[in-house]
Image 1: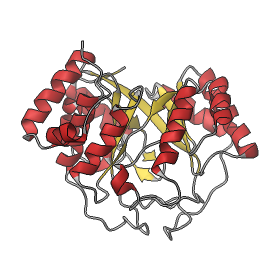
Image 2: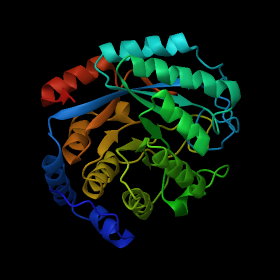
Image 3: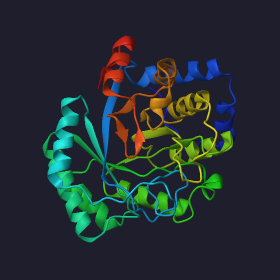
Image 4: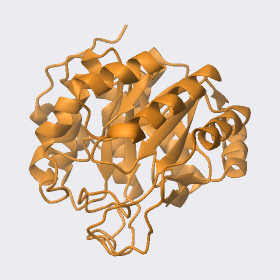
Length: 314
């Protein structure tokens, strides 16, 4: 039985990041194997139900109105379209269906439509997840009542680096939304992005923040930055895949019973790098050709890789 800690220091976690790579992987895989079947993987599908026109200025995001990325704002999808997409995802092996919307937070009639989407997806027998930005307590309560299981709200990076990435919402705003979701009885999904010019200490600070919450997030997505043309990070040098694998390994050690999701950026990894991510403790992925506006590994590639590795869906 692995001890669940909520008192990690940044020094401890920076020391984990500094371990020789193979030593870190050995430790992380031991934690992973003690808490999960290492040959099972949870599969989710992510759909953008409202794309573009977001008022936030996240430096990595093509959907922000602050940047000329060539992405046009779209109207919100219809409930029937979302339910059809969820049914297709279920047929392709997804057990969780995640809905993302380019909002600062849900408002007015759009929120009512989103609630109907949650109800419809839940009725299919799928786990439901939403990423709708900042939430009020009343909104979190209504989402729970509609059948929402999970709420995603990423921290993105550590608090010291955060101000270089986002100025339109604070780190405290993000933490408050996670607390609101947790208090409403929703499972929390929260992680961050590797490759935004941060230092290892920033990655350590982000993971310490997550691991020292009253409850560890049930899902921890670790993303590799996908540079989007027209954004402030559009020309950033691609991070080393070993940095991503290290972040996954440390997340697994800190949050031993959480699902650690290999998320955005997976399409750019070769099969060997993905296999190391799974060995390091990643046991969740997004399936489908796209993640919001970013490319993702194709379903046929996933099927082939999982078969070669002997991985089966949870």
